[in-house]
Length: 251
Ligand code: PEP
Image (tube, rainbow, N blue to C red; front, side, top):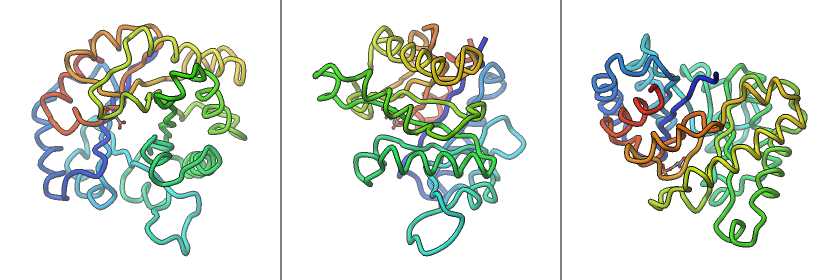
């Protein structure tokens, strides 16, 4: 039985003070309700340390939204994995579709970042997902396969990796993949992982779904056999909604 994992991706929202307030509220609302699943929050870089202080000692993990593949150097605007570790992060989201869409991330740069994060001891949430045009032209499986294969190229141990399937057409649009649509792709990912790494690693790999997850649809999505939790954008900015999603995953 895989333990579910729910992570809130706060994206470019909240000042430091607002992040602290949201984390404080979240702790209060969650109470003891989330012992049944892993929970993380991913504030902006500038708010990581302060938010980390709020959740320190709780079961909420501090997650970053990206990292660079070098340790230090002339990479203006970037933050390295070792810096995230020092700021208190235990995990990092890599290859989010917004990074791929707006900031030129490719499977090659995603792979470099994944390798660096793992080598520094961070857990990785590797995001994959097809666009609407790709889905409509029937290449969803092929797109997901190359994102997974190339994102994990050269990585022999996937025990610190979670894959997040996030159809681009469902992110921030209010359109959720149906539980059957999501399950089909999750099963495809698990089958591919079994081919690449064997049945045992494939059986324990957690695959989150992301794309307009809300309190009203979380339980159904999480009831599918290959959906092991969620990566939550918009709904993670509201403590009550996020807590309801965590509760659905803990059931
Ligand atoms: C995301 O960006 O990871 C995401 C799933 O966003 P939303 O929940 O807002 O669709």
